Every structure is written in structure tokens, then in C-alpha cells.
Image (cartoon, rainbow, N blue to C red; front, side, top):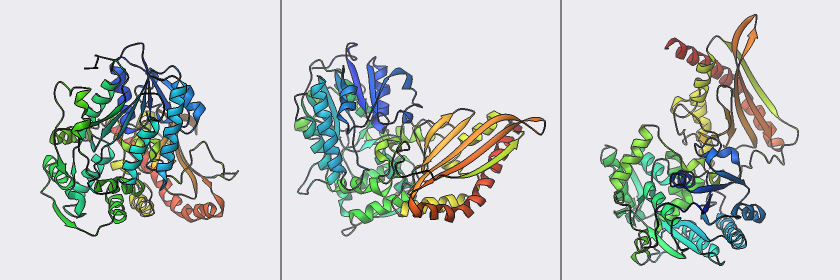
Length: 504
């Protein structure tokens, strides 16, 4: 065996995609093994709230910029390539190819010893590989064009709290007692628990000698996609689901339906659904067991992986979610720091309230906003805006929130993202819905003298930078709804804060 215990201290490891579902958890795993970790992120604000933020080096840059990549890779022994652009529009495969070529060249020039790439398993079975899986394979090939050894680890469905696959299965099974599905739900797959994915990735960083080659990882069970749904229903104590298979459901229709009933937006669901035409089982000729032995306590079975994931959800212990990754930023959205078309126009709607509620209770009420808690009034209008967003391909409200009580900077919250957070003072949310412009919702609380009394002040500001005439018309259209929603919101936040004070 090539394996060693732990990661040698002399090695420095780079994790790309550290704001993503796998990447953020991998950082924790590597740190627990004593690794020296550097992360590459485009926007450091997305990881400031991570518990490991102060324990890593942070390199800032885009995956498309050679100089930024080269700087991040300088002094690195092992680089984890966890980047993809599946949410970047219909030509995401071209973006992924350019990113991989840039990274491979920079890794060669920086004398990196090992690249570890997490790709996807697929078996053509007479079908052409989907665009998503073909791009995953092409990414590995592009990285391997250079002289740096590339270890490709391929996985199928990853089961874990917050993963896109798990969330699709969970929401579909809970909400649809009867499902009309395409015939390829009879295709087979070999899921793997996120715990075991992290085990293989971290152990790959411990190999004594740099390795090249492609290796598959999968759990001990093989299911059809239909059986996977039935297994989840059994684990979740739901009635047996009725699955009706028909031959005429297209990828477009299937992804549109998934976008309406699950948190996964159509833009992400379409390539994922398209990949279901290919089976995803471990090719024993490429089994990773020849390189790294399985965990000493064994690989998790599907039912145990589902049980563990559900337990994490129920106990509010979800460490990361698919929606936290910047890769899933809607393609029509530019980053907050790139307002090239914003000009000087910016509209505001301000609500200010003075309260006897404590500062702590006001803040806790603000931080609990969204998700199952709702938006403190006019929830039907929020629901309707989310539905309209999903109907035109947006993220809608179904992403919910990771934890019902606490937010983390950089994570998603319904159709917002937490842009900044200062506990007991300020929360700023950036809108990721489809808009003709950019929008923010900001809450600030502090103590002030008001009418001769020391009181708490709550300021809520909705800001909008319009794009062209359409953006200005949009603001005029929604302003009457703001007059209904926002005053009610601040009043109900205060009521909840006073209730919290009274409950002490």
C-alpha cells in the first residue's frame, strides 16, 4: 500500500472550491489530520463564517486567471481540484475546460507534486455521456495534459445532509406520494456517503508517492434510481411511494418539475437529470481499493447514509449545503463587487423603529428570519415572489436556511445570500433572484437616546441598483408591495423580540 497515516507536516495542501459542499467539509477533515491548508476563493466573504477560517491561509482569485492560480499554487505539494461551473449556463463545459487548462498549466509552472480531482462516474451503456458527465471527464483529461501527476477520483451520487442529490431525493419523496418518472429511473447507481468521500480524498493526500490514474469510489450498495427513492421513503418512515414510469418525459420537463418541487433550481437540475441516462457504478478495473483500503469501520450503506443525513437535518447540524457554493450563483447575476452597469442610480426603502426590546432579542429575531420561520408577515407575497422566480429559472425560496437560529456569512438564505454579518449589529442580504438589477436587504440594530430615553433602534433598508429602464420600471412596480411588506416586517420583528424578552 502507498498509504501513510496522516499528512506529512512538510506538505502544504491547496483546496479549491472551499466554499462548496465538498470543499468546505474537506478543509475540516484535512485540518483534523494536521495538514497545513491554503484555500483558493474568489470572494473571501463567502468563507468568513466558516469555523476553520482562522486556521487556513486564504488565496483570493478567479479560477480563470492564471496569475491568481499560480500564486495560490506556489509552495503547494498537493492541490485539490474541486471546481466546476455547472450553473454557469448552457456552455458551462467550455468554461470548465478553460479553467482546467489554466489550472493545469499553473500547477506545472508552480512545481506542484500532486493534483487530486473529484470527478463523476458514468457508464455509457450505449448512451452518449451527458454534457455534465462528459465535461467532468474532459476536465480530468485537461488537467492531465501537463506533467503534474493527476489522481482522478470519480464518485456517483453523494449522500449527505445538504448535498444536491440528497436534497432532490428528500424533497421529491416527501412531497410526491405518486411520481410520474422517465423510464431511466430503472438505471443503476452506486451511491456513496459524504463521510466516505472525505475519507478517500484525505487519504489520497497522504500517499507517499504522487499518483496518476483514474479510480472509482462507491458505497457497498447498488440501487436503481427508483429503488433509491423507495429506500429513502422507508428510512424516513413515509408510506411506500407509487412510481409510474413513462417513456416520453424529456430532460427539460423533468428538470422543470424538479425545479418546482425541490430546492434545486432548474439551471442545476437540468444537467443533473440529464446525467441519469448514464449508469454510475464502480468499474472494478479502476477500484480505489488497489490504492487506498476502505475505512476500518467499513463503508456506509445507503440506508445508514440516509439515516445519518436525516439526523443532521433534524438536529440542525448541517455543515455545508450545495447552495453555499459560488458555482451555483445564477448566470445572470454578477458579483456584488462588479457593478459595471449600476451607474449612480440606487433606490432605497427605509423603515426605522424604536423599541424597548433588548438588543439581544432584536438581533436573535433578525437572525432567525427566512426558512421555516418566514419573513415576519405577508408570507404569501414572499411565497408568490419565490414561485415566480422559480418559474423563470431562478432559485426561489426553497433553498431555505442551514440552521434555524444562526446564520453564517456567505451562506444562502432562501433567495438571498448573507453578504455580511456582525453579531448584534448588522446583517446584509444580497438578492440572488432574477432581477433587472441588484438588490440588498440590510438590518441594523443599536442603542440610542430617543425622546430622552435609552432605546434600541432597528433600521431596515431595502436597496436596489437598477439595470436600464427595465430596472427602474421594476422598482416602481414593486414599491406598493414594499409599502405593505416592510413596515409589517419591522413591527413583527419587534413583537418577536418582546416575546423573547417576556419568555426569559
